[in-house]
Image (cartoon, rainbow, N blue to C red):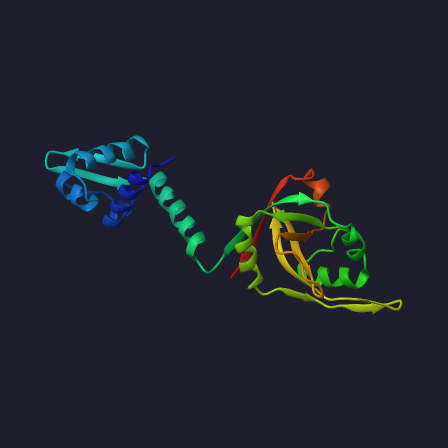
Length: 222
């Protein structure tokens, strides 16, 4: 793992042009750019060189420094992490919850043909007859509230055999590499610490989940 001070020094060298070719600089110039002493600058450069993040050619009046491919990849990883934190495209929210038992109603509702057809059209899969219920920790409730501000997909209610079934709203998500959907009944107040997930497979069996096992959900946003 690259230390924060080494990463900062690598960034400064890249800003000086080190990704495009050798940067010529004396110890004093580098120390000024890194806002540190020449001795500390020398130690940081040696550390970067030992990690193969830069190459150096020493001269009596200075040195040529180049950011290596490995160094550039390290900077790209740092850039990607900041994009995930502050970017508005391609981001995602992460929720973590433990598996809890539901009332068993999900199996029945997910087997109803009008619901199945709408989920297939909007989510791209026909749901397995059953839902995975997760209880969120208190620290995840604010993220759950942020997810409420996203654009949910309405699933229309219907009537059949003298019985009326209410509308549902759903939101695409992923668990591991499995495309899933968070579902919330439209007519009832739903606990904010419970997340109910549908998927094309039985998630408990497919992921070998037991009661109180922890599961991470990713919800993408634009």
